[in-house]
Image 1 (spheres, one colour):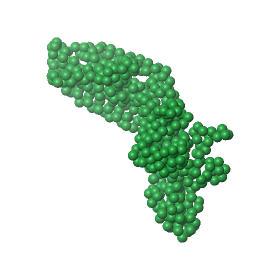
Image 2 (tube, helix red, strand yellow):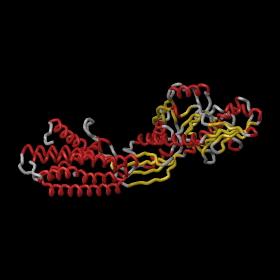
Image 3 (tube, one colour):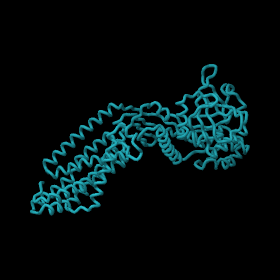
Image 4 (tube, one colour):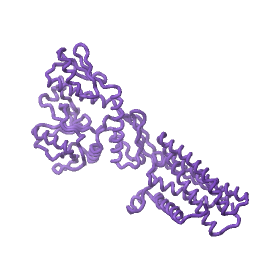
Length: 527
């Protein structure tokens, strides 16, 4: 065990040098680190919300809205199917989690049931007395749609936040229909809330030419149409102008592949430029070709952004959204369209802001605790084990550098519990050395020579060291797997600390001892 192969020496020294190089950017400011050449390490430890300050949001996904939208779409499909078959009906609408309709000609009720059977595979039409037809979703189908809606919402929230440039956000599911969002270092939380609060469902609809909005507001809205308000236009009474639009979506925002903010060359006003994929571009071209001279409403989240008249076919698959926008609003709208639409609206249930002052106090307290713990451990090891203790202290300092390097490379978020994990690691890092040194003492008392005592000490202590550290590592991994937030932060630093302390205690300390032993060849071990 006292023999150290050259390749092991090179490996240990390389790992230590690499750790020092990767940890070095943490000594610089953020701007200085970002200004380093690309071929040099520039990643720093990412501080969590409790250390850096920022915003904490708890969002709720309105899963009922997903089902309600699906049911409304199914109502339109049933209406179209029955009209094509010339089956008279009444009472078509949504009742709870089902679509209901009454077939006036009872003799054709079974024909109607067969007709709507294939409209949605997740529903089973049930025919009751009097020609009443009911299409209901099963509980399993409703549950699956809710799970899918939450998973899609998490992904789209992540895309939107990533577009804003927030470093190391925490976005995770909490419960059945909630999303936890933590944004370290956010200096404009209101903008983030506006971005997350918009569903960003964009669609293109034709206006209903047969009825004016005033007639629809005074009487009954024609079937297949609906009244939608404008986002910025006002009527004579100062209220939002209303548009009567067809419910049928001519082109969906799902076909968008890109959106960007820009400036209209003619009016010099901020606009949003968008481009469709091949399918959307063809639909957009077909619609504009067959409806020249008719207004075309651009609808975002149930409001009409603008309703320009189609002056000529638009065949290139791209277009422009104009309105009373500011430059920042066009940037945010383009961001929302690029990230995609949320499957359901999000409600902010809880909001907290953490000031950077609290994080600075936490960092200062963590530094004090770490330094005090480090000094006490160093003094203890030197007092109890002398020169061997000093070698263990060198390995301990190397361990701290390797932890900082690992946190920087992995971009793991350091939280206040994570600092606690580092402080705990400082105490645990010398455990392996203590076991080896005590074993060496026993061998010396038994009359062994220095080389024999060191060899036996490492051989007999190595199994205990591995067992103790592996069991602790398993506990840390379980904490990470089943914990969340602060618990995970503690588990991350503890796991990295265990791995690095195993390396420094078994490899680096032994290399220092073997080097000293070969150079000085002592007759008595100073331990």
